[in-house]
Image 1 (spheres, helix red, strand yellow):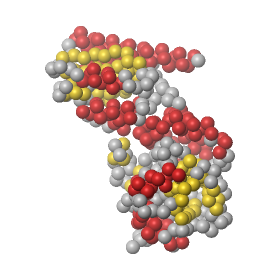
Image 2 (cartoon, helix red, strand yellow; image 1 turned 180 degrees about the vertical axis):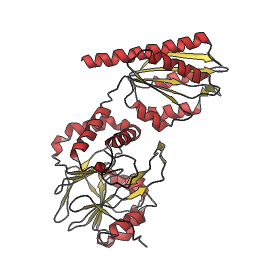
Image 3 (cartoon, one colour; image 1 turned 60 degrees about the vertical axis):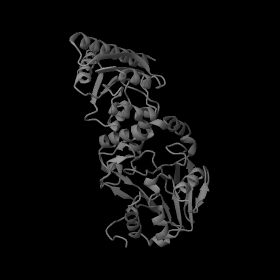
Image 4 (tube, one colour; image 1 turned 90 degrees about the vertical axis):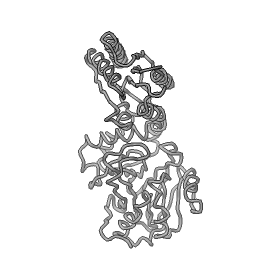
Amino acid sequence: MLTRYHKAIKISDSVYWVGAIDWGVRNFHGYTTSRGTTYNAFLIIADKVTLLDTAKEGFGKEVLGRIASVIDPKKIDYIVSNHAEPDHTGSLPEVIAATNPEKIFASKMGVKTVHRYFPDMKLEAVGTGDTLDLGNKTLRFIETRMLHWPDSMFSYLEDEGVLFSQDAFGMHLASSERFEDELPWNLLAEMSEDYYANIITLYSPFVAKLFSSFESLNLDLKVVAPDHGPIWRDMDRFGKQLELYQKWSARKTNKKVVIVYDTMWHGTEHMARAIEDGVIKCGDIQVLTMPLSSCTRSDVAKEMLNASAVIVGTPTLNNQIFPKVADVFTYLTGLKFKTPFAAVFGSYGWSGEGVPQLKEMLTKWEGTELLGEMKVKYQPQEDELKKCCELGELVGQKVLNYINNQNKE
């Protein structure tokens, strides 16, 4: 039975938002979603009624309820899957059963990916430049492979200038507002940065490639509708979003040092604070100290997006890097984070393998220069804290020189 209280929201002459709001989700495959998310789906009312994307499993009735507020779901002719990840296709079988569409479309890689989840589903493949005739409307397809899955695809409603951008330009933000101009810009920028850092960073080269060809796509944008978060209808604001994506994909950094650490008996913590003091002594520089007792891997990723240096501290536990530190830097390494500079530190009780292992992990970061290391037994003494402070000064000065030289170029 479909609910009667879920309502669609009109976003252009013939397009409706028919998605779902997930207020409660707080973990999205390892990424902390502190403000929930939306699973956006879109309905085009045309001669051939078309649904773009669905929602995570468990939210199918909400999607169908919103569709039913506009049209009988059985009148849907086509379904387009822009992205096969389960947060967009999990409810696809339920929606297909309720609508019985003539055809279901996905990118070439999308067909292969969807079949790994639903082997018996019948789909037709489309590619860049292909169009779908909706009778009185035309939908054009643009493959955006690895932005951020191999199957990712944009769909563009030519007649109304609506770009369905799947995961690009979105954010994990549950809200009652459906449009970006109903929300403050600082919130949009913050949530976009969080999303880019944790989802898109790895694919920055593909973002840059997209920008290099964006003008040639001849898109007269009126609305940009991503699969998560608010819909962009103020194109001046969307222009600012594009500028942020260009900056993040170019990996431009600021006068910023991030100090990340965990601690057992406060020895590594004392070292972190002494290093922090050393960086601060350099003057015109932002220092952010992030104890992993209160910061998540997602918090660290966001702050790393524009940092010029990371200084990492770990105790040694059972001859290994401390678990939370290992977790965070495995996560950052997988996202291919890199900073111009790095340093490592930590305390240990017996054999002290944590710092060398951490150093080895950071040597895999392409383009990152390791500036030094500092490790002490049990608790740091006064002379050792002084050396920690000096390590912070070294890193801070390197960052200042690096950014100042960049500004001169």
